[in-house]
Length: 111
Image (cartoon, rainbow, N blue to C red; front, side):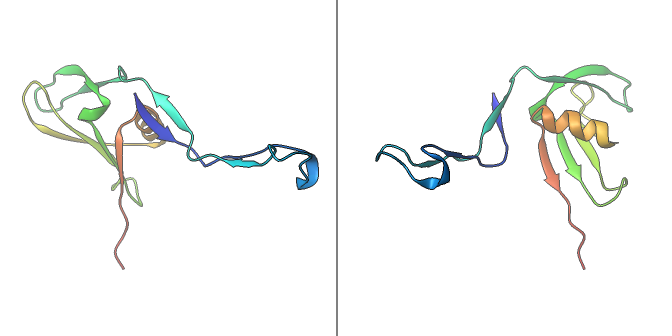
């Protein structure tokens, strides 16, 4: 499973107002909370070159998120003809790919 990290959490224990009746009560800080992504997540894809249809693991895909629709896309290599494939990624595709553990690259415009 690939962990996806959420915001860090802080858990307070003891009496309200920060006064602890005993030495055991304290503030416990925890790091990022991992959300497991099943290793068996697969994505259906198609190659525009050979017209093949297949399923790909999250590790076979890359997602690039840019400032515009033109610069937001996902890529993979066709397992049937070895052609590099680049397809546009809308909001729903971004949501599915990131939720499925696909590696993401955020593109920044240069001044």
